[in-house]
Amino acid sequence: MNFLPPEIEAYSENISSPESPVLKKLNRDTHAKVLRPRMLSGHLQGKLLEMISCMLRPSRILEVGTYTGYSAICMAQGLKPSGKLHTIDHNPELEDFAKEYIVQAGLKDSIIQHIGEALEILPALDETFDMAFIDADKENYITYFDQIFEKTNKGGVILADNVLWSGKVLQEDIKNDPETEGIVRFNEYVKNHSGIRNLLLPFRDGLMISQKI
Ligand SMILES: C[S@@+](CC[C@H](N)C(=O)[O-])C[C@H]1O[C@@H](n2cnc3c(N)ncnc32)[C@H](O)[C@@H]1O
Image 1 (cartoon, rainbow, N blue to C red):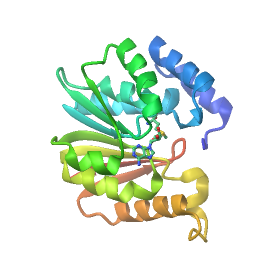
Image 2: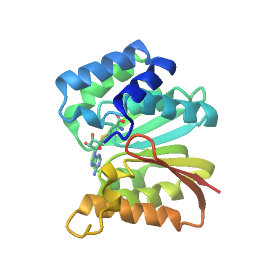
Image 3: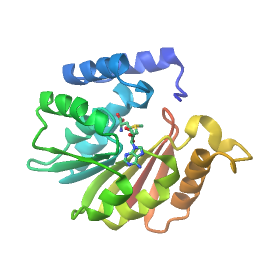
Image 4: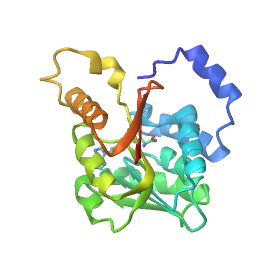
């Protein structure tokens, strides 16, 4: 869900740096050809991810939830020369679609796609990261956070999407709703974590920003 009124979102998009032609085409083609296009980060969130990455200048970025590659392409803009972005998705049907746009964006040597269960791939990655973006199954957010935290360098930033979950985080009864329960538990977990400073940014569907201290 997007909490921004559509006219405010359109105005903000108009004032912000434009989507690159490749991202604009990817956005359009995802809406035309792929199921659940609302999952794509889109212009404003993409610019935010790009900007955070450009400020951090990471050597290594990790993403859980590639989908069609939009957010990966945005975050890769800030990579140091010879930096790499690892992105994981368990849907093999999206691999070639995303790859096509990664190539068009000139990032085929910078973005490494992993196809499979994030819970299996993450522990096997022999890397440390400066930036990460968690944007997949909500029930596993805490586990992803823990696995990533271990591999995050001091000062590194871990982002997590959908942490307001269309406002369902305010629901009193979350017991029969595993996704909402996953997000609510994750938010409390981050709040009480002693190794980070964090901000729940009420932008779009809610973006948690945690920096390892
Ligand atoms: C919200 S979409 C990602 C959107 C993308 N980050 C963007 O902003 O354009 C979530 C993706 O996570 C993937 N996913 C869900 N559960 C997963 C799991 N257990 N392991 C790996 N990928 C998973 C889905 O296949 C889907 O493509």
